[in-house]
Length: 309
Image 1 (cartoon, rainbow, N blue to C red):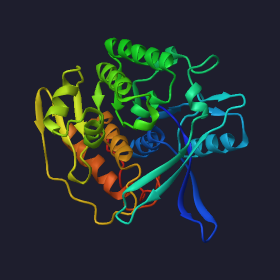
Image 2 (cartoon, helix red, strand yellow):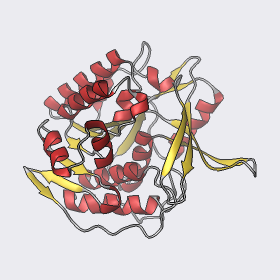
Image 3 (spheres, rainbow, N blue to C red):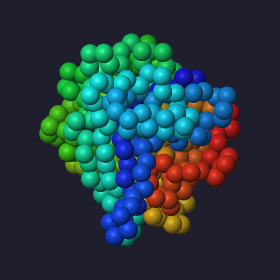
Image 4 (cartoon, rainbow, N blue to C red):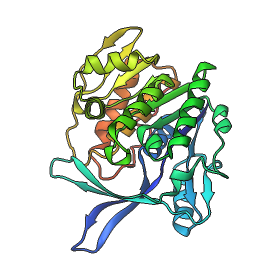
C-alpha cells in the first residue's frame, strides 16, 4: 500500500527550561505525527508512508527532511521552496498534562505547497490512502484549498480512500463561517472520518456526540471514529453507533499528539484487516501511552504497537 499524509511539518520546542537555558528540539506537526505513528504501527511489508509538504531551502529545513526520513517516511515528493522557512511552535504543558501552544508560522513554506512549482494535485492519485487534517486545509490560500478539496472529492468518487481529521484551530481561519464551509465540503470528500468531539463542538457549537456523528455521516463518509479523549471513541458505520469501555491512561504528562497517535494506529489497524472496534482500541492504547511522555513524537517499546497483517 502507498499512503500519503499531507500537511505542515514544524520545528517543535518542548521541555522549555528558561532557568537552565535549554529546550528539547524536535520536528512535528499534526499530520506528520500521524504519519510517523502510522508507519511505526504498520508491519514492514504492509506498505510505505509518504509525507507531502513544502519546506524551505535553508539548513534547518535540510535537518527536518533528514529527521522525517529517519522516522522511516518517504520524502521524495516534499517540495523545497526557494527562500522559504519552516514554522516553529512551542509546547507549554500545564500541571495536569493539558497543553497550550505558541506558534510562529505565518511565513511557513508549507503554505505554498500547491503554489507554482509545488506539489501537483494529480500526484495524489498515486496513493491508496490520503490523510490530511483541518490544519492542512487552514494553512492553504483559499483557491488552493478549494482545488484540493475538489480533487479529493473526485478521487473518492473514483474509489480512492481519503481519511480526514477536522482538527480545528480557530486562529488559522479567517472566520468560523469559512472554516465551517471548508470542513463541510471536506467531509463530503472523506471516506474515513477521524474527528475530535472537542474540535467539532468548538466549530459547530454542538457538544452532543450523536448529533456530531449524524452531521458527518450525512456527508457520505463510510466510517467515523469520534475521539472523546480519555473516554475513548464512539464508532459509526452502516447507520449504527458503537461504543465500548476503554482504559484510562495511568500517567498524563503531555497530551500533545494524542489524537494524532490514535489516528495513526487506527488507520494502520484498518489497513491491515482489523475491524473498526479493534482498530479503535489500538488507537486508544497508543494515545494513552503517548500522553505519558513529553513531546509529540515519542519512542515506542519495540513491537508493542505493531499491527498484525
